[in-house]
Amino acid sequence: MIRCRLSTLMGQRKLKVADVVRATGVPRTTVTALYKETAERIDLDSIEALCRHFECDVGDLFQFEASER
Image (cartoon, rainbow, N blue to C red; front, side):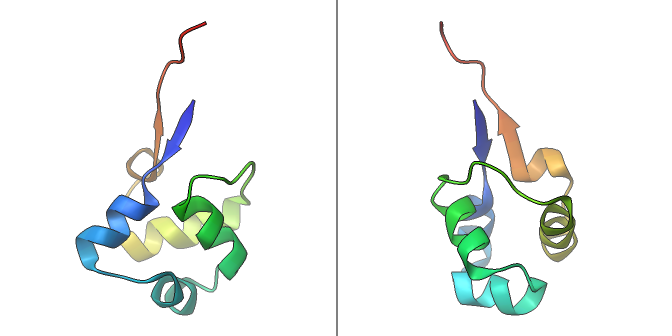
């Protein structure tokens, strides 16, 4: 399972979804889906914009967790 840590990064900086949308240009629906961890896919341009804004690597934004099968 891939976990998105956007809500954690936003919480650390006390940012709202609207703040991230305004600063990155990433569509609100995308930011909201990542925040709520309901996104099924994301464009590389959006990942790049979020990583630039939060000054982080992709591994800081997304985390892989092995699922039990």
